[in-house]
Amino acid sequence: MPRLALYALVVCVLAVAAAVVSFVQGSFLGIVWVLLAGLSSNMCWYYLKRDRAARKSVTS
Image (cartoon, rainbow, N blue to C red; front, side):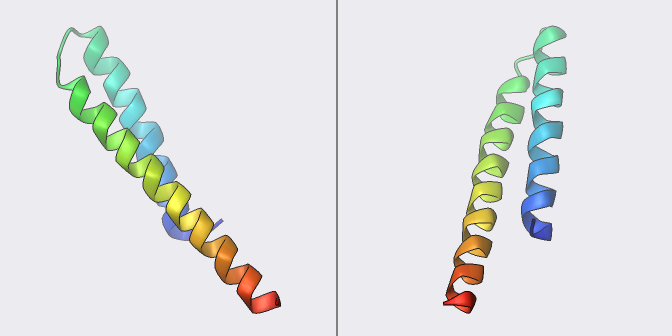
């Protein structure tokens, strides 16, 4: 797993946890955390696909 994808995955998990805590406490700041989780999730998928494509082109 590429390092940037791993970092994005960690940020995604932490953002989801922060969103849950925010909503449990009654704060609507959790919406920001949900948006951050979505962004970091997309970044993780992008870096994974980019790495997979790079490995495929090297072996071909």
